[in-house]
Length: 467
Image 1 (tube, rainbow, N blue to C red):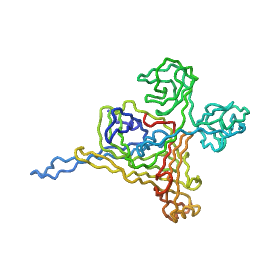
Image 2 (cartoon, rainbow, N blue to C red):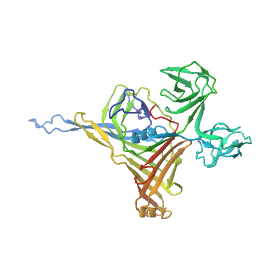
Image 3 (tube, one colour):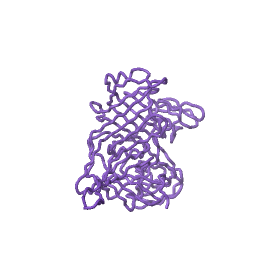
Image 4 (cartoon, rainbow, N blue to C red):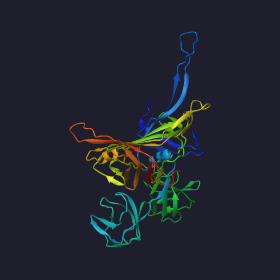
């Protein structure tokens, strides 16, 4: 017998049909974590019964308390599951194509070409598909020289004047592998595509095949070497020049009056083997800190109802999303819509749903339900004391719109607090080095157009979160 290794453990998540009840068909997900402390604890209380001797009688069991933090990386795919857990399903829309500008392409040297495209809003490193040009149609990755009004790509230079009817789309285009299409059964078909890196739930357009050209949603069963779609099987051997194109989507999460959806979490210890399942779990709090050089980790505080040790996983074939993490150098901060640089060193945020559970008779010491309270969001903002601009805003209780944005190529996560105020705090002198200012941020909803104290926008290739 050997001790289980934490590196071998796995955390799984599945949304419940109703509180503390899984659906007939469970759709599970593998959740990347840095640690998982969600667990049940049931205290025993000493008996006060007098039995005629000095030995204590058997203790009584108390209620089962299921709670703890699950610390997770802030990434472009799996973190969306935690956002759904806090705010329900988002409103999703495809990222619109951008029109190029009438004008000549530029030879940037070193095998790079500049294409005019005013206010394109695309980040360096983003995958794009260009269409309508004579020489530059196809899939590209935006190069570091890309500016706000010019796309720079790797391509042999050929003189051309592009038109405003030509477009650039934020999308990934992947070539399928040469090989046979497979019948997966149940109306599902597998297309060979090693290392495609696309998530289940993405919408793809297949082109160049004999039988499978069209638009599909990636189904469960998609793995690192195969794309699975719903289609009528027809035997076909791919040549290896067929393509799959996946566009990017923006998912907008807001605070609503609805109760949050519960989920079940499992911890698997494969070497023992053992599985522990916590049901009726709701997200209670999320904390994350931006600033410095460490990983961006979100501390998800969870509150649950029950715990069991089932003989098997709730979903034997859970979905594992690709891991595209956001790092500290991907972050930018804005105040009232304007980027702020060279000023703030740390933004520590707390999103608190104020969930509260009630123990009910007949549930064997488990919570009968968990209900949310008032959403509280805010944190602290620390910066370099260079002038009194922010001290004055705090003194006058000036309302601010505070925004945080993380951009990694085509992926992005934005948090916007449309209405916020800074606490009054005189900068302290703590030594001979530079003076810093620290403010407490309180976020709220009063008259903002978003009608929410918080708006979160996650950008990735996923179209549907319910596949």
